[in-house]
Length: 387
Image (cartoon, rainbow, N blue to C red; front, side, top):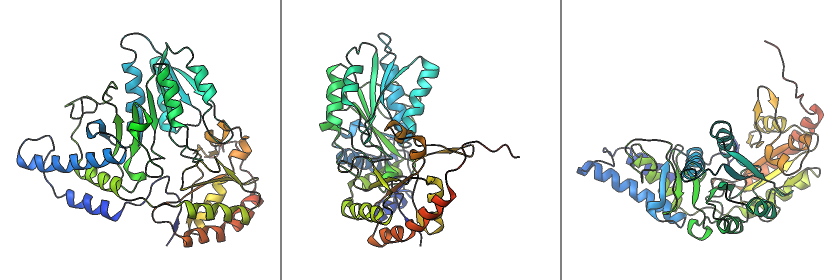
């Protein structure tokens, strides 16, 4: 059986969540209907909502179910931006460098189509947001619509100083959204204690089903909806709600989550011993417990990925490849790496199914993969014009 070490991309559904999901699929009824069948579906839906809320230290009414993390991020950023334009123009969006593409592409769209001005806060060499840079951007905040940032970086795993970011933004009277998709289920995420106004999460990152996520939206926060219709969720999101997915999400959210820090530390030590040239990226201590991110000098990350996959080990590069051209990770570039350094990246992430045997398999396959990828060298960045 292949060794799966890409839990940051998606993690296997928990058995108890799968059981809850499949059992609930047999329940007939629209949760908005007032007859008994509809109310049975509503009970499942609201049980799931309450469980998700409890896992995030939020109130059930603050949990708005969505189709996943990407929709949650779009609803938060676009919704807050549009709502903040109602009394006077506030075109500026303050965003951390190295964000997930769900954020990057959303603010880019607002810039191209809706007059937004994107103000990027730099990262340090470990991938941490520059608080002094943020404070400088908020010194004159009359035109700032919102601040948005990753709770923890989805590639290198660095955990951000959440409460400090929120304190600076709120002192300037600016609402804050945090993308907590990568952090949820890995580290404690408290909506109440953090003070953020909006928080995005996704079920499939914590052992729930694909296709459902949530935007946690404070009672006093105002967003313009993306989807209009029946107004089923606080007039923020319309559409018939998915009760089976919601209860499965809730079951996954309330399940105990494996602590993989010891296994991760063994993996990191093993990689650095097996391949001394490897460089650990991200904060060496204040990082997600399941994340190990390396760059391998002289190696193309995609080559390493395919060689490891051929050896039965699934990992990620954390970078994109478009039109046949290997692209360096924008996160690593924002951290100050050169393009060649950034292109040699591998993201190895652990989860609830990970074992010592999985780590052993990776460490056994890695030296040969690095040697072969190094011999092959770096891929050309000139796209082929062949037919």
